[in-house]
Amino acid sequence: MYYNYHGQAKKRIREGKLIEFYFTSDYKGIRPALVLVFPDKVMPIRQYRWE
Image 1 (tube, rainbow, N blue to C red):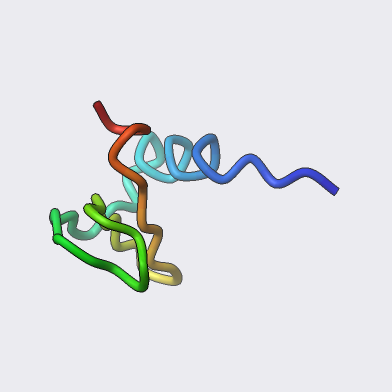
Image 2 (image 1 turned 180 degrees about the horizontal axis):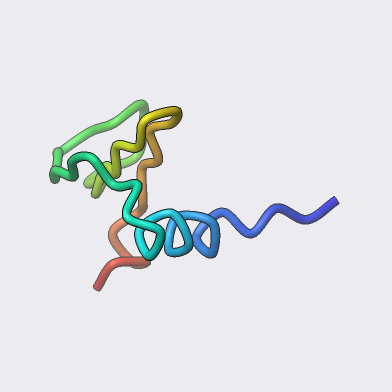
């Protein structure tokens, strides 16, 4: 089954569920990363996806 990770992140942002976001040099092996914090999940995004 395919899980549209970035589509789900965008949907959660549109729904107003984003609590916080921050940039970090390393998040569990993803370097650098944009980290999106939602009430029930933390979603790291790789640099080439947010440029």
